[in-house]
Length: 285
Image 1 (tube, helix red, strand yellow):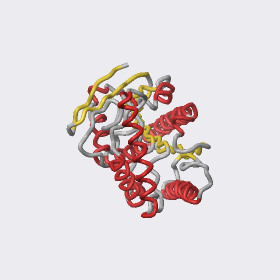
Image 2: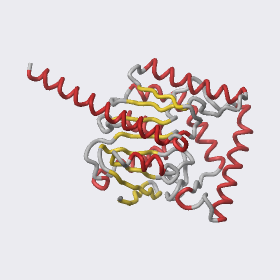
Image 3: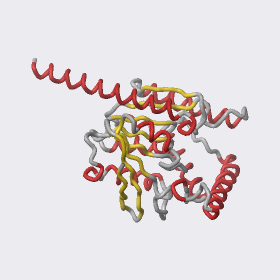
Image 4: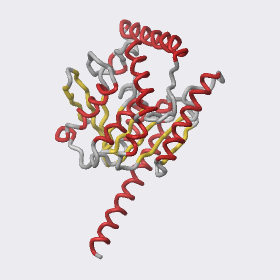
């Protein structure tokens, strides 16, 4: 196990590396930390050289003045821009959860040849229309205000909201980022996939928003399914695995996700080897 920090844009990002095998970089989602994903990370380390880190304002990372999509994307870029300190033996597979999946897609699209593959867990979904409508705003704002207040109370009490599991973003930060993600996913994400030059595997929840039967919940779940269908039509080679779960699937289905990641890495390596052999045969002829 190695621990070090990356300093950029006025923030300090804690990085952990452990395991051996094909390098993986695991990017957490909004309001999740590497400590929250410890079960999945531990399973992946059995077969892979895993790098994990906390996004700004999460876990052991320092707070920041801005929590925009581009700011979070710069955290991933800063970690990957430390090849000497990471010491990776080859280009890594990026495994991203939720917001982390979106960050991974945008990074791969902007850095061709630097990523061996993408495994995207319930994120980076090019949904056909935004999730949050004007009528949804008051309830979402209240939900995130309650969440932020609960986390602040836990921090003050020294409970689960402190230290490695803490989230320093306020309700407005979370709402603004979700509104920004809505625009990115509906208007830009599909184009980003078109620029990616490595294998892509999706792990998708069947009931992203839950199963309470309410009309809005069903609308969210249908939008999620429609986004995946939209992507597969545009990029037919995209491998897709559906898990019977809600959006918290990394916390409830870590063993299944670890198996999917292993299979994606194995298949990607086999395809890369086949491509090398094919190019060698062409050169010989």
